[in-house]
Image (cartoon, rainbow, N blue to C red; front, side, top):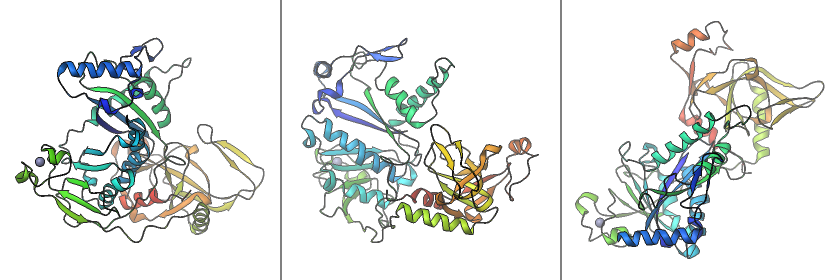
Length: 449
Ligand SMILES: [Zn+2]
């Protein structure tokens, strides 16, 4: 779950954004009902703030649910470019002309620092979207990200739905898409109306599902850029709208207090100059060499070729297009062969079926699974159903032992699986760690589609 907690001047938003505000949660029907019309809700909200003598600033949470667990620059860029920015353009009172600046206060996830591809993307926003972006990074672990409680509560809502599960009325949530559907029903509105909270807190939530593969999924890799030398201590990155989208202004800390600092128009007379430092303009160097995009047939042919050379005990990655995974790792338990005899079909979870026809090129693997969803630490799966045939054209990369090292053995699991024999030298009791570089490689092997 990736959250954007957005603050708007209510006057800038179309009536439809306020549709259903002040609704009540109906425990029997398990849904919200009896909300106000959009126009009525907006009018009442403006009235309430006017009475308080305050600007009508409302908070709206945008929650993006995905089985794609890589919240890397590609994910952040996808959510903004494909979902959030289009929402702004569609829901501003004056359409595309409504919003001019997007001020971002992002939590300081350490991998966002010194991240030239992300700066390059910020530098191109105004040129691309006509909305100028100003991005401030908090210090790692210290920024109290406003999205944390909203996302945390959302996860609780999904967990609560699981608890309601009975055989007669099944509510079990198996996929990210189902989780998004649950949240759209149970979490799009707040249980305590904005009017009882006197205008404070979340007004409402918009929930969207981002598929992990296929149409609407995150495109990787993103446009590359050479490291911006010395950029690590900088926390503010200001889009200046240069024609080629490569210039950016950087500052040690952001101010956002002076009128000029808020409107990104004049930093010279900043009252916090001593703390924030001057604004410097730098030019980013996009990588001339972008990783080549590969067509599906080129990837499939490479997979077929790879499988002819695999030996027993090799670890291989397989592209998957079902469930919550993007790739799957397995140890080869039977080398290249073809399926002989009649066609067979077996279920693959959900509606997906795996169908083998005479002459299909195959290898067999025993699967490794991550210890937690999204983790790069793996363990060997037990059980007969975790050893199966895969099509050679879905094979992507051979993982060398140096990229998949054994971690120290966990005593508890060692006991429970001590009687199981090893599989080609891999122990059920062990944990194996995939290097981040190889993990990134596996995520970036996406065909051009
Ligand atoms: Zn200032």
